Amino acid sequence: MRRRPRFIHYRAGRAARKAEDGKVSKLWHKNYDLDRDVEEYTVGDDYVLDARLTPADCVGSAAHAAMLASIGILQKDEASALKSALNEIIELYGDGRFAIERSQEDVHTAVENFLTERLGDAGKKLHTCRSRNDQVIVDIRLYTKAWLLDFFANAVGLARTLNGFAAEHRLTPMVGRTHMQKAMPSTVGLWAGAYLESLLDDIELLKSAYVLNDMCPLGSAASYGVPLDIDRGMTAALLGFARVHRNVIYTNNSRGKTELAVMHALEQFMLDYSRLAQDMILFSMPEFGYFTLPDEMTSGSSIMPQKKNPCGLELVRAKTATFCGYGLQVAGILKALPSGYNRDLQETKRPFFAALDLAGLSTRIMELTVGRVKVNEERLLAAFTPEVYATDRALELVVSGMPFRDAYREVGLNLDKLAALDPREVVKKRRHIGTAGDLGLDEAAARADAADRWASGEAERFDAAISGLMGRSIELAPKAPRGA
Image 1 (cartoon, rainbow, N blue to C red):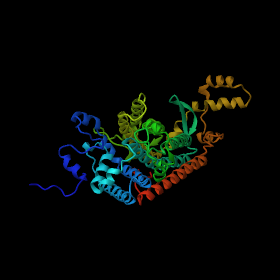
Image 2: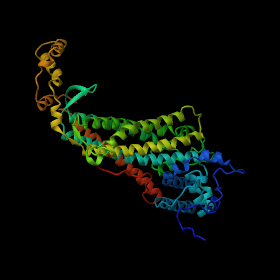
Image 3: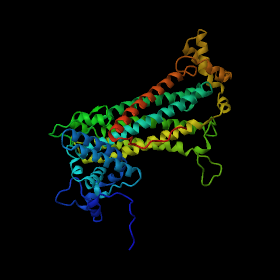
């Protein structure tokens, strides 16, 4: 008889033995079994999605245990034992050895089964005064808070890369375009600076979404609180939240809404990335040749040996539409829900996590590309044909005393007589606020630094709270790679 591996995944004791029959104990278990097809339909892939919430669920449970001990529901030694066991689960998860079974439905059941097997009554007491409703909200908010603080660092990194690129090419001439046609003299620095300022505005908008997320839902239970004198302020402080999410009905109504606020803010980043990607694709075409994309950021053709395709940028452009679809999916779920918890909200988890993953990866792709793109000044200069200076010439006539409308007509009727000028000298004359000669890059750098300091301060306070609760630092969401 073949022997089983000694230890691969944790399965909770008696629940593990029942897993062979697909009858793992559920938190809501009653004196009947759910129809198998109904169970499969309602559980879906939620138990898979929940895996990433394992550390957050353990941290939230540790705070709840400490609060229950403070009001006498748990003994102090029980709360201490629970914290140790919860830390053990986090270690198992980090090693890939904590599995959530479909029959368990979610991370909350998997964690409680583990605790009950290890600690008996202490594990059974832990769910007192909370519901899976407020439990999943606190899990998502802890995960989101950690993810956002990491994302801020990466967004600031991209802003600094754009700032450096704009500074390097502050006065590198580039034809400005409207309607995709040649318009007026501009610079590469002005073009890059536009995306820089937009990104900094995106960061400010995301900070607002962060504030909405930074409220502790624990204790709202199933939307109506509990008849015991629990200390919601204590759990909020232990978990590093800025404040308690007060109204218990609204706390549960806010599930999905808060995630959608984060998604809407991140959507602004994605829209910027898509437009930046489109510009870089266009300007790196051989017909333009303004930019050359780095070889390592392009892929080849299966039939044409010469091809270097901007596939990463093309997919940023396409995946932005996918991202927008995630938000529409969540909004569609929320639009007609009655107040209080409804199972529909389970379906907001998948698009939300997908959106976070996509925004993080897209930020990385854009930073890598901007940090390595080559600017071809000769091709940029060659694009400055005489008609690009038409508006400049009309304004020269205005300065000499001619009304603008007459100057406009005069130049428009004599476009063939326009002279070629030195683009470098022309762009130097643009000195008013916001033009090529005054990009405000120092101000932009100061905004990026301020955002970085704010996010770093928030991260330090959050880590200090979680470390104080758990006795060590906990990674609640995976960190993205840094640098270009």
